[in-house]
Length: 320
Image (tube, rainbow, N blue to C red; front, side, top):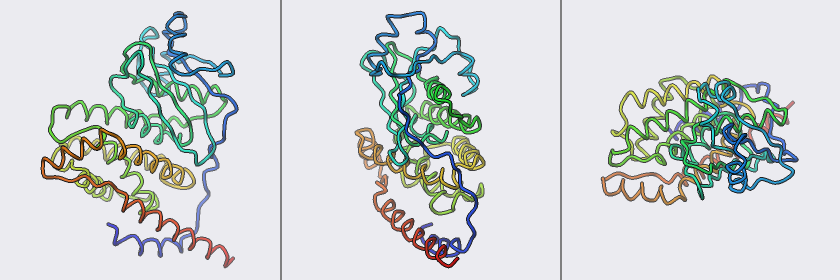
């Protein structure tokens, strides 16, 4: 795959540039706290959750209701079960996406920090500090709706196609993880790394323009590099392909959005590879005679390539 890159870059440098997405991240003056609807009539639970989230007096406060969950992530929940809450502040472009789950009182049972981060990147949110918490154990599936409600509270639009893709990705990662929970050599951290690396390669190596067959090849390659070849079923792989193609069709892999996605995805990969769960996965893979690639070498190569690409772009700009 890497052998094709330089030839592609030289040819692509001759291609005219299209219009770029102007919706770059802009720093908010105030954080937004969005409580689950069940907390609206339970002041004790809300106060406990506020402490977990680190809520400040200057925060904009809102609630996520069942109709919001249906609108943003196409799920149906009664208001009385919506207890997971979020606090978010959008930061300047390039700051990256930082997710913190506070489980001092209640656990988020189904979704990991990395899975939330992957899903939010898919929705187009690349620069923000997000805290997720609940004072009681919850599945955490509705937390994304709270993030999107926060953008609405700040008067910003969220692309519904991207939020649907993000929810589909979150559900697929969670479902595949649950289906393989007792399978030796599988972990959710490996799967998140695979999906993140697939996104980065599509942007860096294909400029976002990929066929389904090419995506299938990339996914197979990344599964092998992360010790998951032969572990996921064909149906599970097909579900990943569908997610990636839907993300591609949303336009996330092109223009300025793609640049922000890659930068924030690198932060996510750093977070994954420095985690204890990733080291555990590497150790387990080694016991099974497999190896998980750290990706530092590939990341360094990509950085060099993008720098090379930028120099080519500037050269051709100077000719006109």
